[in-house]
Image (cartoon, rainbow, N blue to C red; front, side, top):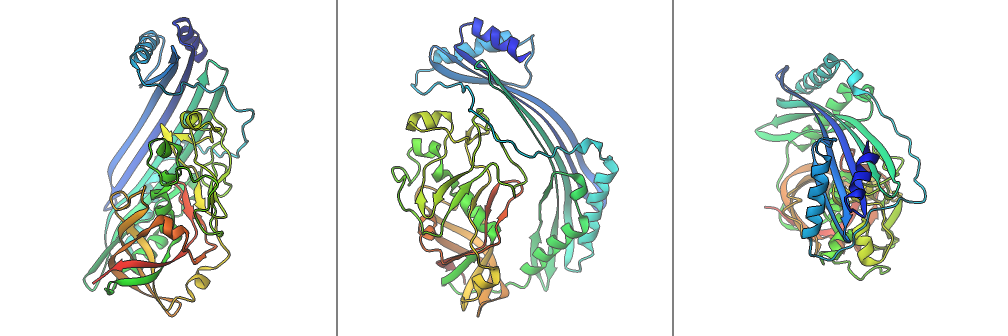
Length: 436
């Protein structure tokens, strides 16, 4: 069917034509007070036509593509191309020489009885309520996502991939002596049988209870350790500076610094769509370019930007397989771990902070300059030990300066199930802290 439509497009005068089709299914379930509060199922078939006409590249999208509307959509694609005046690379990719093989588990979540999904969420809610510090479970949630992607074009490219997973979490309110905190832990699984309500609730409770009883600290400069999860969040917030798209728009401080030292020797930052420890792996990007493992920063040296077809052509380099969701983006992007355990990481710190929560990552970060000022919370480190939680503070610093001041990197690399960003715990050195 796709080939027939491609032939029609070429007959209309398109130099090349590509069809990018995504079929998706979503399920969402929410429980409150042991009753199903919300439930929805949806399916969607989205198609993008990408074409080149008279040297101009353009694209249009439709929810459905069929023999009934293909002629009209192709005419619209051509009309769009005729209206383009900007000069940019027009590329439909012929395909990479080879594509890596990946182990792919595609579990059929539809085969699981609906009652089992409800029971999982009910059990999670029940276990959370058994904690005496939990005063309310605002919601417990379960969802499923299935995405099938097909990419076919006039140059002979014909690729497909499937992504399927489920997730769950319970949002709980904790209280002790008038101190109120909230906590939730999102768990994503590739197989429904891997969900464990007892363990999931235990992790959520541990996080929530640990936040209670926070004390104020005076403003000042403190040695700071970021948890693996939160340094990954910081890395995600500044990841755009490594993008060829940002470089093209003059929105990266790393322009012209390829091959230069931008961090300590101990710093290696990797983008690895094939990473064995990741929940999700990709062997090609949304433009059909083969994905590969690459160090973006290697032993402190900036090796180069990641690119899609357009930015690679602009900079005269090879595409890196980083086109996802219509932009240049990272996949399984992480700081290489060191060899220190967490206890060894904090052992030399006499009076410092362990940051376990960051807020305002969208508004409090200046990607180009590297400056950030974020609300945070965590724990006081006293004489090399975690001592007590601290109330909300403001942590300020500069991402690029941190890359050149890191004292130690832990061995506890953790990759986010859903975002794909990861890091070990990191002792970053001294940062400015706004407290009482």
